Length: 299
Length: 271
Ligand SMILES: Nc1ncnc2c1ncn2[C@@H]1O[C@H](COP(=O)(O)OP(=O)(O)OP(=O)(O)O)[C@@H](O)[C@H]1O
Ligand SMILES: [Mg+2]
Image (tube, rainbow over all chains, first blue to last red; front, side, top):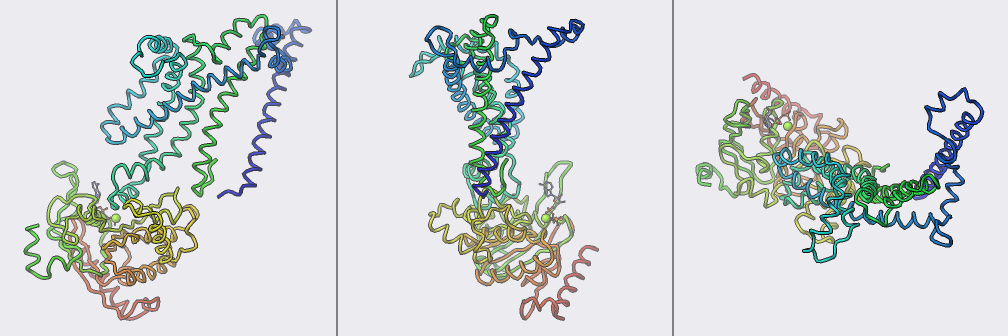
């Protein structure tokens, strides 16, 4: 219903706010750095503060411009730039996260639909769904990778390590989708449900025409959480399982060379943030597409 | 069905009745300490094209009766048949259109698509159901609001969409549970006139639950007064008005009927 020109203006304003936010962040970083350095260099008496606060010399906090310049730097003469390495890693990780996110969403919805069928199933199974999230990710990641390498010969396609990382992302995604999805599926009023019954609607029709659409406003916040969780899960999974090719491995490599070139790690971190933002952005775009056509303008 | 035989012998053939209820019982949570006897030994018969209002003390079991008739819940005893079928069969046969106090529109569908919903479930083709839904919106004077979402409609308009939706598949019985209860007085009177117009045009049989005595008198051919819980029909009054226009509400005739229903309700409540 929203007028396209106002939407465009709103989007322009959001972009502007985000740009200002980035600039402020860079200024704060630089300002703190200058402040810390001033303490270190001149005021020896400030040692109390200096030992409390994080170190701010160039080794610990490289200047913003140096970090930006590092994007174009190549570790080996004439080789791939750090920026390019980060981009490749981000795309690799994004693929793992996306596959895991998709699988987790499907599994989460399936669980929600099954639990919807009876209160007893809900009471019996939901605690296990919740308990599943207390298993430490770092511990299961290597297990999943080894299991993937050795135990899945029966699959028609060859199992690759990145798929194991997707499994980890799935593990983090299905939970919020199942819990919020169930709440959403249960959200229609008794009147709406009785009306569907009065039209002699089948269970499947009730699910498709009433419960699923009604669950969307509950589902999207969960999907946004799941989107970041799947990216973070993929990075952590790569690191703990030693899978190469993604941002996790890159972060591990760059962390090893932190003493000689701290800027690189910052580049990788920025890359990871952008990857997470892209994932959330895709979900938010889908949400706008699906929910603004309800007369109520979605956020 | 055998137990319905005496009723048939006593009067009209079963086919002549849209609704036939004999000795109906409904107890919630039967056999438990929190058992609620809601309806007990209730009799009611409704002929085609009648407009029957049901009025009674709050919490006596009016909504329960309607949900029993609609086949949404099962009775614990007695006979209930709709067009010669059980309530459950009639529901599967889509004999009912239901309207509740809350319009119950799906807020992600436009007015038109809300009216289309039952037709969609019944497998009508897109072209056919769109045409019918448009006609129904015209019938409730909302032709110009087809593409509006419920959030963009007033309470009265939403309720009219809900009525259009209930009538869209031409049910033989329209079940309405305080459909105008949430509306202001002016809108309410307007909706009543509209409902009467629709009732005449569509030849539907209506069972209408209300708390308002003037509303019951203005709309109905017959008013059934329910007793306090466990409910039965304590009295039935035929309403004979020469015509039903906005002016009718100010006539001697109308007031006489209103006070008759009021006295009956009071005596029933006093029992
Ligand atoms: N699902 C249920 N379980 C237990 N008791 C119920 C249930 N539904 C209704 N009742 C009880 O049955 C009685 C009749 O309820 P009902 O809703 O039919 O009353 P009503 O006449 O429609 O009331 P109102 O005029 O307030 O709408 C009430 O005492 C209510 O508490
Ligand atoms: Mg009620």
